[in-house]
Length: 120
Image (cartoon, rainbow, N blue to C red; front, side, top):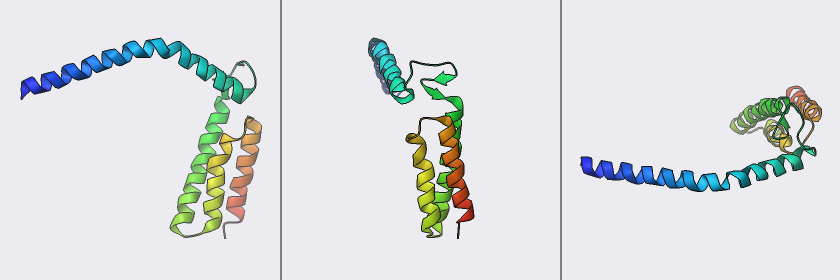
């Protein structure tokens, strides 16, 4: 039984080494793909305060409003109410389509206000 475990361990060790060798060859290509994607998203070559073209506050806002949307979607689904469900879907999806941080927060606050005031 121990010999079989040792053979499995050797197999996984060799597989990890091979994956590591092939990964280093593609590392430069992957960096180029990430840079191209960030350039397409942000529209600029890379400014200070951005992580791959995404601002930290934009990412945080996306997480916050998507979380609110997820909770609204689950609430609407459990209570079979379509308004919170649809607004929840909108809150989860809209950060993918907005580039600007200010626009992201304004739309998120607006949708959250609609969710709060028109919940019934």
